[in-house]
Image (cartoon, rainbow, N blue to C red; front, top):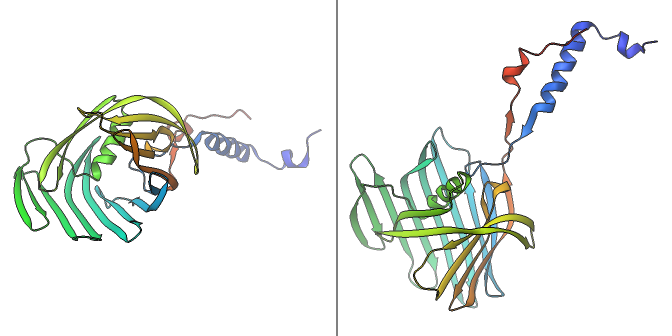
Length: 262
């Protein structure tokens, strides 16, 4: 004997219900991509001494124009350092193209501003660092120091093991190389993360820098540690993060083909 609930549903309603349940089962919360809108906050330590905090913010792009921001406020005794950095760039596939970079520093000692405007079509970069202006050749792939972090994460997502970036920094073009060391579980105050460990490639071992990046968080760095002559100098750890919700629907093309027998 059928229940009232079953008999009260028409064949059409059953079909709709079945399709909705099927679609619901195929809605998959996608892992965030490196360019998902996001905010990440970090604790900055000098050895075991807490210096302050830093925050990265990547809001939703305006069309294809992205704005990435970094803000930090650290201090030690009477010394202070406050920085506000902004990078504007566009995306072409998995390649990021810099547009403008602004870096303001205030605190103990001289304050300064650094700017770079990337004119790719004219093959030049106009820079100003402190009071010095210069024009650099733009004939290859270049980055600014902030958006290079996102390119790094995009390249990680592509499965690369070695990385090389030319960055416009302080009125010059500097070359940086990185390599994957391996996988490692990272346990810090904010949680336990499966990470990929990265090393900055240098000729000398007097200075060493390591990154731990979490694939499940769009390769967000969860820890950065810097050593000078074997002694830990800086230790930066993820405190909190937020990604705007994103969902991937895999059932759109299947819905029209779905049939339910009465």
